[in-house]
Image (cartoon, rainbow, N blue to C red; front, side, top):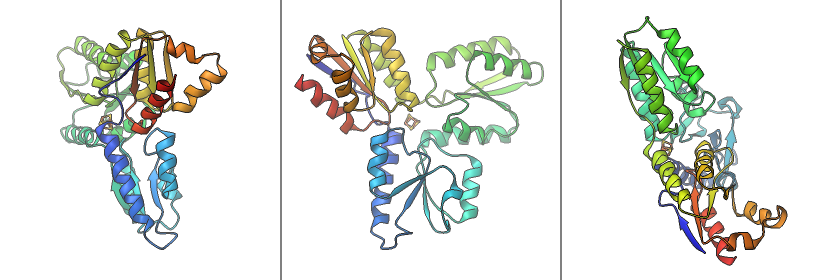
Length: 303
Ligand code: SF4
């Protein structure tokens, strides 16, 4: 059996930076001999990967849902994760006197910057992305008053009808993990429907996402089995799974090696099922640590 691990598999630059820097911060905080001060808080899960989170929690990281959950916040350290946060969260952190370690991905911060520039110019914004995703919620908070978050064709049509005949300029930006093909289709629709409007398109989709999606597409066409490793809550891992599944029927989406072992034990998939594949492709999501990939490799090599 030949195992092919995607070249773009695993941590992207933004997640790698957030995990490495957070590890440094929690390890530093641990040296402080004060039970209150040696806790580092993180607003939301640092990455959508339970193993990474568990590891950091053991080192003293505490995940909180809201800044107000931090007891006696003045001087306490809080981490902002790669997805970025809202304008209001920055303001609240300042009011509470928190010490912020902002590990928002530079690519997400760049979108916030673009949004702010266009708000200043008074130009309305179409933000293409998943409405409930923290990155989109964060970006939307920098889009002023005249913006629409668009996540599907229906939403796109609604937004177009609302602005038609009322605007002469428009900015279109996207969530970093949005599907490129869909984004291009949306741009085509917008250009057709809003003729006469000056449309500025900033393709803010992250290369890491595009390259990983393209490689997953290629790889899954050329192997007998695909294994996608990633957190079930991770939007980019779910997308990789969908892409691989569309090309390769024998695609498995697992969070870690335990799930693969359980499948072998419980779901009637036998070791022989893996042995029969001449080639197995593997891709890990942007928040999947290398250790998880290596554990799966070890498991498969034993088959
Ligand atoms: S996927 Fe791209 S934008 Fe998102 S954290 Fe990674 S590098 Fe940054």
